[in-house]
Structure formats: C-alpha cells, structure tokens
Image (cartoon, rainbow, N blue to C red; front, side, top):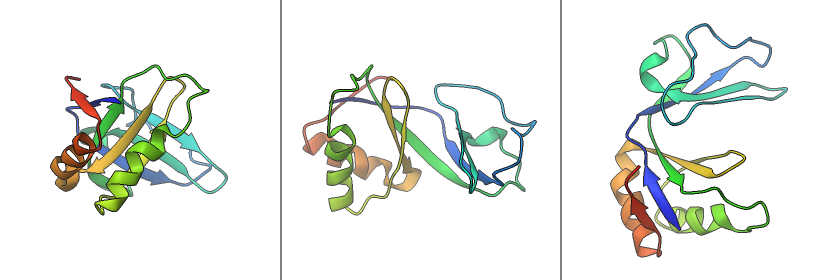
Length: 126
C-alpha cells in the first residue's frame, strides 16, 4: 500500500455532543474532521488552531493511505493496524469517502514508518 506522512501536527479534541462547531475551528491543510455522536463531538485538526483550554490530545502525525480506495476493498486498516499493534504502536484511525488515515503520536512516527515499510508498505512524498 502507498502511504504519505503529512507534514502537519494534529490534535484530537473532545467536546460535548450538543456543542456547535466552535468558532476557532476552520478547515486548513490536508486533514480536518468533525464527528458528532450522541456521546461527544470529536475534532481532528491542526493543533496550532486549538486553544489551550480545549480538552484534546496534541502531538499527532497523520499517515494517509494514497487513494481513492474502492468500497469493495477489505482489510485495508487491518493490514496497517496489525503490524503497528504487534510493534506496540498506538493509533487513531480515521476514514473518509476516498481513503483512510492513521494518526500516530509523534514519538512513535519513526518506528511506525519502519514497521509499515517492513510490512511491505511504501511511503511516498505527501
């Protein structure tokens, strides 16, 4: 699978489920995401736009699966997540209509790239 490490640093934020999209949030860069459930609102965005008082995890890097991927394909995330899990590298997975993203804490990125390369995946320029 062809992968690209995005240059930005990301934050994963948790807001109350009924909160409207915050005024500080705006689309910027390669990846932003808002997901509402009955329990929460999760926002993935570049970390430098997130105010310090927002409940979030900072210091994530994103690995993009080069797509678009067909919906009939199976096991995409498993082929990426399994070797990372075996190497004890945590991840946060995010999917869009066209492709998948793996968010990896910055201190695990080098090991994640090495692990994925050894598993037959190829990194290309973002």
